[in-house]
Length: 464
Image (cartoon, rainbow, N blue to C red):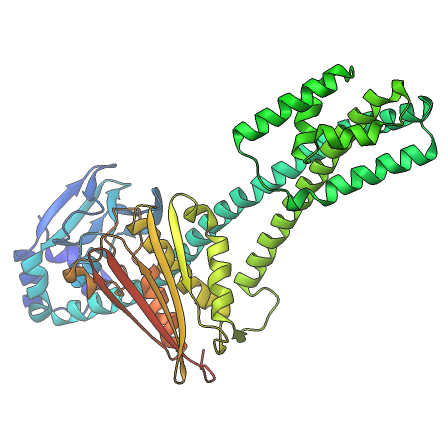
């Protein structure tokens, strides 16, 4: 049973009169928890306010599927007020880490408490305000870290593909070069003169140079040409004739071309010369693969550097069209699953002054939400245009839309339609605040099959 002495010994109940203490005792219940017992689970209706009279409770919140300890409520500390005041389900789990004894007020008694015991009500509101600020700061930091982690994982995947391709090509080239060098030396020993070797080398350079202009072959055309050229090579005793033919067909080589090339070569050098052509073409292909892979890596690094506005001042001249493209590059791993992007960028779009990295966070939040709402399959349309002294950015998707009863709340902090632990409800709140800091506006229009986020930013100097 809760007594005056239980409450009077706690600073939380200082300045309360005997009548106020009597009211609290009469309108509360005592609850005993053994170590490990749960008082409330995350996601359950928030209908109880408690004060720890003895023992200690641990407060846990799920974030990105993992439980995070937010702190504890030892003797004399209250809990449960935030969810009740905000009218939302409990955002935390509370369980005893010591044998505990609680004073618990139900929802009706909690509401009456502000009139029945004003000093306690004032402390509850002060504590709630402090906790809300601390919780919001923590959640925003977690949101940023989670977004950074997702982007890092996606970029690692994007970088891994060209890096692995370059590594494989370099390894194959290490094996191919000694073979190619040995074959070139053998050509010299087989009676080929300097003029013949120069002509063969020039022909090889011609084949490589024209590679980019060759028309693609159908599967049947390629197979027929490989068979024809393979038969021609086999008649001239070229080792691995059909493998060599496949490499030469890739370069657009025909038997008629080779007839002219080998016409005056020593008989014993024909097979070696043709093999050298095929192997040198393969080596060039490996070099091109390394070049393309390295270029892709450089493009990704450049996009990330531009996306983050690395090594730039806090306020920059921002090119919205370029930043939208950089954002798409950074999110490439999500788009590849089945999302089509359509663009309608205004040419010569005016630049704005602002915090480019923060604005990129806005584009990222909206685009990622669209991708997830569509189930990673659908169309996203990006539109930009100049509107008097503003730049307008529209991000639209053909997903299921946002229900009308939810539409008015999507910019509220901590509001989310995702399951427990899958969303913090801060992505759009952060986006809203960033746009407001840039003296801009953000609105959303939605119906089934069409959702539009419309952002307007002033062309003039920002206060960001």
